[in-house]
Amino acid sequence: MAEQNFQNHTRVVPQYIGGLLVLLANVAWSGYLLFQGVTGSSVMTLLVAVALFIVALSLRGQVLTVQDRVIRLECRLRMREVLPAELAGRAAGLSVKQLVAIRFASDEELPELVRDVLDGKVTAPKAIKQAVKQWQADHLRA
Image 1: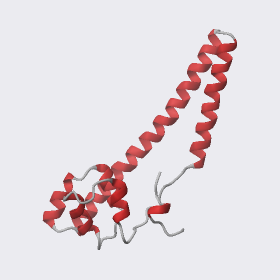
Image 2: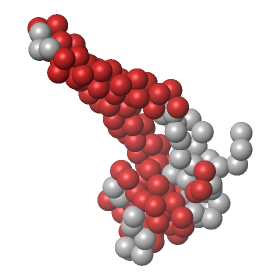
Image 3: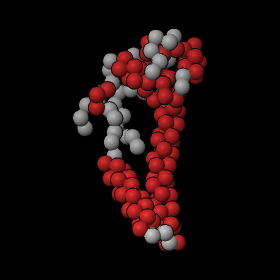
Image 4: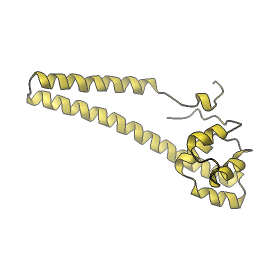
């Protein structure tokens, strides 16, 4: 796999985007059919099309939420092993978004980065990721 860094770490799932486009086209087509003539069938077709689109969006959100929970757990365990006890205790105050960003830091730079985040020197997830010097790749993402 290619080396991962801040510029290329995002993941796009083409199948998901393609599926959403098909579902969105289905909503548009169902709306068109409804305006051609309101029937019970055309109303139901539009409702089902909208429901399928909403379900697809909801499922992606649920998958990403579960992924963030796993990352949070992994980071907390890793910080217990790598950070001094005092700093590990303070790190419990980090938000999930901050933990998701911090996960990319190597073990060597983790203590300094956690201190910077806790001290408010860098707080936004994007800025945290940009502060990582030795990127620890994560290729197992949803």
